[in-house]
Image (cartoon, rainbow, N blue to C red; front, side, top):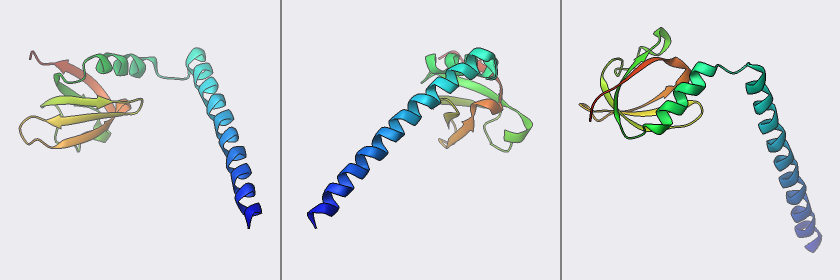
Length: 112
């Protein structure tokens, strides 16, 4: 019975190190893609601008695919942002939305 515990521990260590190795490879590939221009630079810079303005009020314009959201050109609070998603909260209805960064056409910051 003790062998199963030892085997499980060794197996978990192997899986952990493989995952770490793959994670490093993925980060390296992402850097290469950015360097070669395969990543949309406009969306990258938009994401960086939005990261600096978390907590501010803004009006966001979305492309046609994401226009189904009720927040297009309405005042929202920028709650959070990561590499792919923007977390918004509408001011009037207090509803929360997740919008992809790539679906944003424009942003206008409202004076707080």
